[in-house]
Image 1 (cartoon, rainbow, N blue to C red):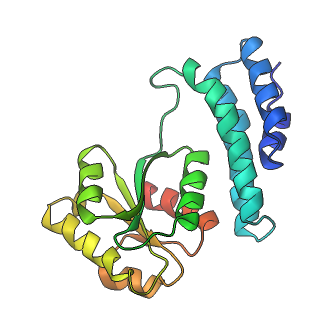
Image 2 (image 1 turned 90 degrees about the horizontal axis):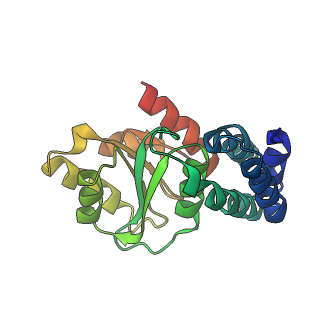
Length: 210
């Protein structure tokens, strides 16, 4: 029997060798690839997100947990069939035009992937046009990040560009970053705001369920 509890623990503690060993063992024993992901890897990463949100884990712990999860996922992915892993939503994430900061954005991307979202990481300094392109390519959520007060207005400009392209009603727009607030979110017409990467998963789940 696949040991899903130990698999979760390996992800939580960021133990890459153990996470990959247990995943390979489960595959060799004939465990369903979707069960390995849904019962072993994702629950582990959700605990990491919860601990991060509660200040029990910090950025380094999240990064090594994500590395363990990614290593294990690389073993499982070739065996996953279409439909094995229903994704909650496809999220196009990026730091807005003019802003080159990516640690916060990367953490959010890892948390979302770990919770079962499909993530299209567009990187940093992303123009409104690139976000529009991502929506045309199937993204149903746009996640915008800015770390500087000088680049924050580009969040609003990106939302305006989505409206002008006639796409705003088709997507949920979520925003975050150091200078960003709930008041700013309300002012520019974004759908959701998260103060940190740990809270982002819960906020987005609530948003798409609404």
